[in-house]
Length: 342
Image (cartoon, rainbow, N blue to C red; front, side):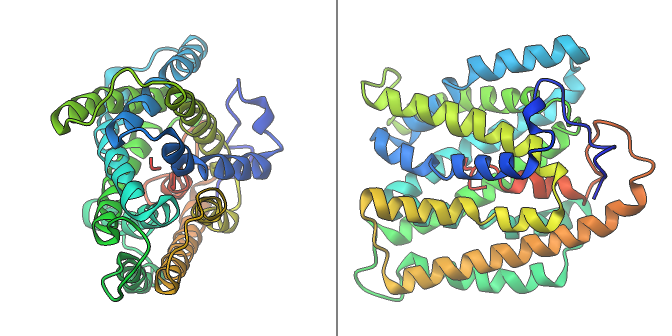
């Protein structure tokens, strides 16, 4: 992994320097509340997606403008990948919110985190980055866990429609893969955590409005207290959680990030049980454990490969730039929002 002298903390986020572990943990704990806040808002899936993005834009826009004043404006060439990532982020959010309604806040979050297993497989297919053996072995374990969560092997599984919710959750995980890979490509300058996030969030906000109108569940004037919960969701997960994670994870030991990846889904399951009394069946709990085990195995494999691949490049790396393709940048983004999801 790149040394601390190479990965300089971006100015404007001084609290991250020397507190990377605490910031990463705080970010993971913050986004663990995402699905909880969606449920507390009682908003439709599209409405929650729209305002999770829209309410975050003023703060992210202000931070992005500060970055531009300090470092210079970004060209369209630098921004287009982040803009494109917003297309996948919009799909991820809407699918994930439908999954929350069908299978519960906790299990939906676990399902969406299957992207940790899928990202290296997609990178293998599109970027010729072969995954490690652990990743390949973790895939059938994750799929078995998904099958158990879906409730197709039992009667009386938890959730309004656990099978449909599982399909939505898997769809969210697939969309999140596209979001992560494109955002990685558009956010290679680690001095600018807010700019690419603003571009992706703005794109997602527009597309969620369009999708919500087509689907017919968008309410563009949310009532109180729904609006209050959505403001909290936007400022906590979309702004604070994302910025803490993207600013801190690339500066942490690779092995530690694989453990932090489990904080958000485990936290969401615990919070959903505590706040909403969600009680998945024993088979669904077993499925969640299998998915989390596969997630941990896959992320540890990728972290180890990233550490090896980046070591020779450390001396030649330039300040403020992300590691090369196949390196730690995907891993750093993998914790973000479930990961969000979104």
